[in-house]
Length: 319
Image (tube, rainbow, N blue to C red; front, top):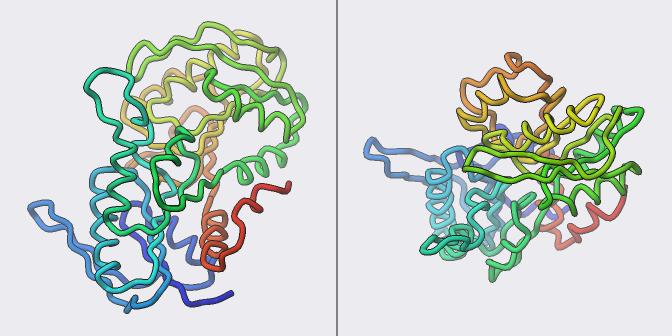
């Protein structure tokens, strides 16, 4: 591999960045990031970047406003340091849920973030499991859309459940759930729901058979736990033997923690490390098993292939 590239990290998810660097077999390059008492962000790139292919790892959560501003400042410093190419690596694309104008006089903030990334100096973007695929069209630069699917599928296959069934917790995720069911070789069911507020969901029916099954529920993210909790309860009511939820991103809120502690009927929640766990959160206190899978090898391989101008799509073309 051509080793003439550099990897930097913001402060949003340094643990993941360290794992990515370990996969690539090289340390993170040096950067000094400070936050002044008035809230302003300052950074200085310590290592020379002139003519280098540079990758900056920064998740859009927690504190998306601070995380993005920090990323913009870092990329501006890299651009002024004469980096040859800057790739923003966003394991989680914050503001992805604001992807359309569904009410009068509201912004399309996912598009705004795309514009700001390009203005700040990004030449290309690597991200994972966007909340809406059409966000890719907001960019006028190359965007590589990774999927946590290979990491999650490996874990599912290692469990050897006797009677698995893939369940989409809402109709919007039916296509993703169908893809999982085909790859696992099992049945498919869909929970029909109606959202009654920002953090409340009424689930009202299950389309498909989940009786005596080990439910594999897949979704791109959960913050308040409303969708997963409502869908899990519905699956239990329809006779499911066990319920295992898999989400790519876990930007847990205080309301979500409360719901997961007292309201959900999950047996297991499996998340990735695209976002660090909520500060002060103790997984052992949950009434069900919490499993964290690392996407560092996936992101590391994407960085390596991007630098070497190799296909990233090949990562998802084989079992």
